[in-house]
Length: 334
Image (cartoon, rainbow, N blue to C red; front, side):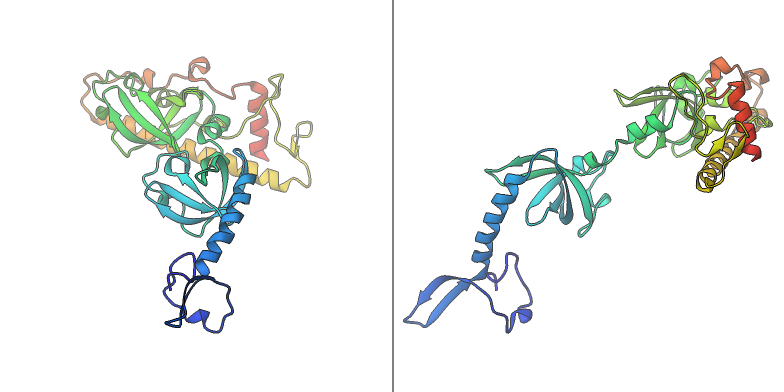
């Protein structure tokens, strides 16, 4: 039974009646005993196939495969007769505890070849190398001055860390938590709390972002009606001359959407609605904060004027250009 397949087989019934080829391991004529091994023949064939396959594998190649097994230190991927290892550190851009957090046996994946050791017949693979770096995605879809929703993940003596995207956390320095003097971060926020923060710096090379809760709240009037969708995540693009790029299918001359661009218009409207929803949620959060401050003792209470600083230079507004504002008003109306 141990010599019928490359892996141990529990049920031999399916082999009844089958014609197979096997290698003779023992032949005892006196006892009329023959020991055969199909496994030995398969191993020889597989060895030749592996050698040829490995010789064709080169670092940098992208291959498709299937997760064949999961171990504590990663996952093995069957590339078509040859298994390669994806170490747990190469499974995802974000930190994971175990390979089962991101993959499962039988799952089809696309991986990149990192290295091939022909003498040891070892192949190292990467799953995350075939996926876009979340930091690159964040830098492409967010800008300094933008308001982003997030969740407080950790409090430290010098501030609080806020997760603003999957695998992306930024620091709100203690000086950026409130307009009032703060000794400890827990005086303002708590772990798990949902907040809106302003992006004040993105350092892609060092994979760091700096955030401000104070600036996000100071620039917002909870009773205000002026809405800038670009501040709340709506895509805003400019050409090489700094001119605003109109959405595909929108005619700037007629200020209307062209026929045949219903899909683009629907996408734009969905983005606008999502940004507006974030704006409304932010206003509610600021209103609740102000109500809490009003109910608290008046000692060290900030002046009302400090809550609504609206200087566009300090808030870093992304769309305070008159032409852009007019365009957005037209798009909103349509």
